[in-house]
Length: 595
Image 1: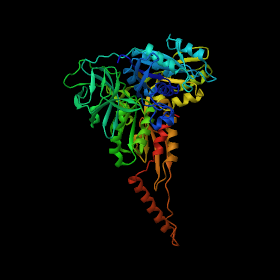
Image 2: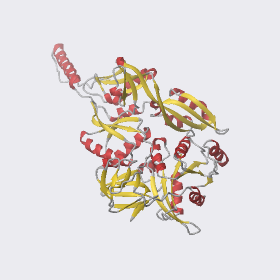
Image 3: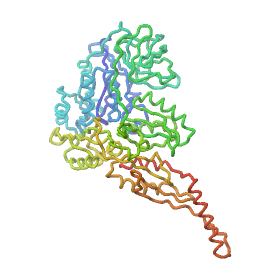
């Protein structure tokens, strides 16, 4: 048991983490070549489509060295996008070491830097690996220099080509030699950290744990310390691509526990599991809790799907603990949920998973951030623009800010500086890693980067720039509330908070777009945009007119006039009591307003 190695693979997106995991699984004989397929740990259809890892995956590998020594490797493959940093932090809490992968053609990128900081803060042993050395554009010497100077890692990196299988044995040797073995304390009371979970239709909630002290076996009575509920263990085992049942899990191991939990509220990621009759005093501190920073409303297309959406969100939260939600009612959209996300990609992934995995049709409102507002001498927190207080009562508006790290080639510097300036950014530093690559640090409002900024950055840099951010203290902002009125009624789902200088142009854009998206009705529909209770833009959707004079043969002009007046009065009544149908494309228009 002293030969257990618990480690994760961390890297920037698309640097080859999942491919290296594939080669390690092959090299250790965990999976045969016949069963092997690319990115085997990326099980979700979305992960394969987008070519990214969304969920951290744990897998156990057995290995016998040339000297005959037996080892157990518990590997966790982690996501690389900034929106899934929470998944990475959870994986780091269960490990003693990390394999840091850097693409030889791209060099050190923003998320590489961020993940290195996380691994150092968790006091993990870091093994640097340079991948894709077989490509003609690989610059191994420059990448080595960037790892040493930019990341502050003096260890010589391992050179590999995950696609060709070059250097896999060197990674295994380094894991054995450099990553400290897991501490084995079997005789202590049970203390297990829950770092992941998922819902199984037959078994209930399955929790993925790292055992720090003691052991857990079938039939044991366990207690979840945060919720203070007890359950009997029905099954324990470990993940070897599939779930493999075992007699027990002991100190130092990573595996799963099934205890027939049907109430998903009993589980909290980061909680400690202990034995009921002999509880531990070593409750694990877990990992740093990350609060959501981007909020949006999720509403079912049909009111009958509300309960299905609620159940789907609760099940999804088991495998994605960074998702938070609460019930919400909108005048325009009815009953739905206010959901919190770590970023715009996280929002997009959650929406797609809900639609695909749970067969739901959803309407998503424009994402927004949390504002802290001083009103009548008191500070209030606003996570929904429609709850914004009357502008006459507002004294100060504090908006969330982030420190962005952009790593890019020097040739694209001018375009990126213009983009950051347009997003109300303040430059903090500019540092050259080498003659061709530069690191930029900016302080920017979070609201400016949650929609479209990443895509714009990739566009102006032809895909070469990388981007990461961390949250800093909020700052005062010159902001206004923008409301959309359709047929003289405010549609709360369209309400947004924006910079005052951009209000006029945004208002015109919205009215022009909505005029073509909203279908014509039997009555005239005015579309107006208000900023601080003043109308700043207007468009009118003309009514669909029925020819009431078609059957009017003969007679004087008064007869025709009576028919037209009657039609006019009918349209006036219809405008007062008629309901405007707003298609889902209108809400997508708000989402794309920054693109």
